Image 1 (tube, each protein chain N blue to C red):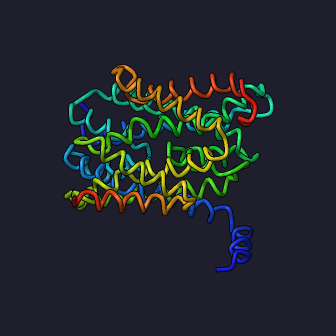
Image 2: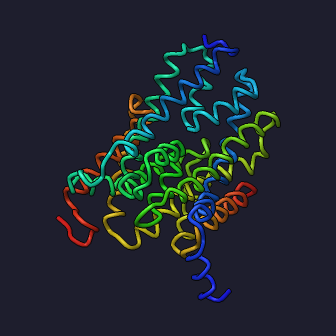
Image 3: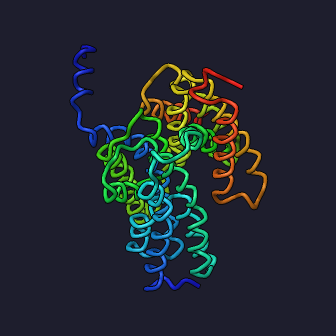
Length: 241
Length: 104
């Protein structure tokens, strides 16, 4: 295809289509995780309705896995809800950061696309450029959401694991996506490298602290890195301490 | 214990509500223009910081038996991303590399 044609196509593409395109790697990455969730939900004694319902209503991978293990361990409802809340507090940080880049959409629209914020949709949206459009976020969120919900159901119904080699190799998908989002930005800015590196080192250290499991490690390492690096490297990273 | 029927569905609904609230509050309530520039700068740092925290140490644990597995997958993704392949190709090539590696 001629470069000019490609350019033209990009310019005329609707934001929601761009969002769907940008969300495809997430949809692929969610497949094995949602599939396994469905499988585990069945063995934890949930019905198909409850399994797909949890994926539709909660839409937060890590906390859904934890919920399954707590249900299997016969934990109380309050404990289950509190754990879910704590696991997902980190979305506050993402929502606030996204708000910095979001266009001035009406509050009801922001209220709708806020539902689709996950580690993955946030990472894709927040690294996608200057201003983020509501249509783009809905396209992005819906493709990721569809994959999550549909493959939760398929996992439940299949009742058998994916072939081991495929399951194992697909586990890299979301990490590969995070790397693909980070590298182009890191090539352009030293500040990005320092931000990501600091948070990566901190989160690795925090992983040895049991009380920081379940979401706190990510919140702490991200906040400490974002705040301290802002103090030392203001602006875009061309200036420095 | 959480009774699977019909209580569980209500527990799931409340789980959904407590998950939605942190997702929604800042987007709906924060007025960006009123924020101190330093705070705005910090919020703009969050995506890159969180990417670092999401990648490490998680990527090392995708195969509980060996760190090497995650390192190979991450290296494949890094090289593909360095060559400016688009995200979906980076994802597919790292899956392929690991898929091949499992047969060695």
